[in-house]
Length: 211
Image 1 (spheres, rainbow, N blue to C red):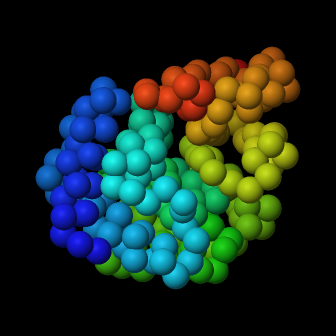
Image 2 (cartoon, helix red, strand yellow):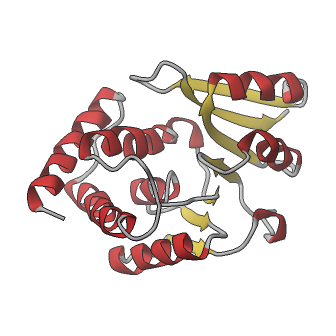
């Protein structure tokens, strides 16, 4: 990837973080996310990781939006990102809070290989990759689950919510229509906190916690 594209991404990321009213990242954290972006661009030419790859759009939609979830993650120390794909929101959240333990759960072999390469390249000790399906993975010891862009989300997310144990929470990145559907099903059993994603007409984050 060209250096000017990396520079454009760094500038766009810092601007997006400011636009989202988030605390600024350190230069070391920006470096890590820029290196992830460079790897993402390189791998995306071989496997389909994301359709959003341009520096400004990726900085806002992937990275800043992932970091925006930190407004609702609270004191979570063990985080499981379901269907992590290219690493969103797992990777940015791991970079943001090195004291947390973040596991990226990705059943696709090529995507999980990409995530493993990222972990090694960035030397993130608090970032772990698991290649298996959610149904076959023991998630009982995680205090927070995240879900941003998974296949068949309308059918799958309710299944995840119903599987939560006492004290567990799930942070969902979604649209208004999906939230409305989830509210109709789970409003009585869960406390639900939401934030609208800045610069977006319909995207939001929603935290579901047992009463």
